[in-house]
Image (cartoon, rainbow over all chains, first blue to last red):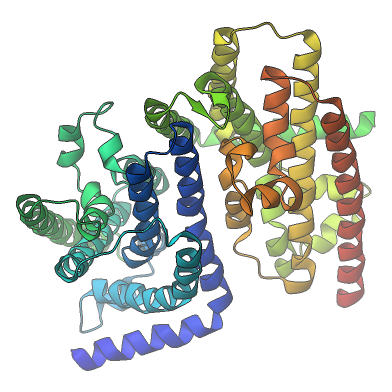
Length: 264
Length: 262
């Protein structure tokens, strides 16, 4: 099993050497929004005569978000749904490992590239903004890494499940876009969730998994969480992973039945 | 000129007929199109809970800027984006030859072949937001404000089109160009906010290199704040220059293509 995984990882890695221009473009562009938002929020706090602690918080928040965005990214939605719709997965079903491994390996190997390409950008940002960024602790770093792995699982599974709906619907594009919109607002990408509580009650957001993909890991690293919140959050991440995994299994098995019914 | 208008009308009619065949898709896309303005409105609400002005712009004025941004954005996607985005594919598949043979301006055909009306719902929302914000604004705006603002919006669209045309012309040489949409999104990421909000180096970049200030902030500023005639004049001048330059570069690309396949 490990040999096959290793084979795929290397194969995808080599394929991406060819497309390194594309990967570079996508990595660089994923930095644009957080950096712009950083500027916007600096201006917001400037108008309030610089509450330096809040300013420091928001800049650190978006700075860490750039790294988190790269680490938890998943992009297989449109590709997987197209493969299912056009019947291209038949050959892969005969292979001696679960189909999802293919996509996991693709994600991980492209991710390694993206992380490598992001490091210089993160370094440059640090040079410009280091006076705002607060110091982290080692235990926080450990829990941060754990939460990132879980966050990636959640993000990956959500997009995978939506793509699986292609077994039944033809317009997964709209579902994927709806998912992305919900994700944007409730995950902590547009703004730190601590600023949202006045508008949309936090209870509603806590029902959704998206908070655990972006906001939760960042807050861990910023040392903003009590021990209770930290453990509660990690447990919630695990719960979501289990829930999503079961949903994936059910949909996959049901979906294959429909797929086979078409003589695929 | 009349001929081109008539043909443009036909392009619109046929695109609409084709799109209406997939009515569910059209409905879906329209609904989804409401989502993003909603999200932007939420983000503005969150921002203005923390402060009452942003770089000297009140919430109302920022919403007017957002309306201007959305109108230009939607018009770009409706009229030009898909058409320019397909040019690399046309080159690769060889269909470009047939288009170049037609007795009409190739730039006109390639830019306006299809009108993508599924994003049109966004324009209604943008106009609603714009009208609401204008009604809510203190102070009176003269007709000159509105007229110049409108002309600057058109000018902004022309500048966007010219810049993106130059970008896609590179596909005549490089052929593969997957990130065209990403280029646009990256370019205009900072466009929702008044250009004065940014510090250097961003303010320099957004004013002189990628002129977001002229494209988006200036029309909004002209409508809701004061009219600065030098800036307006420079804006139109830049629009004209970029349009002519992009036109020339595009035809250099076509000539290069012809000689390569000939």
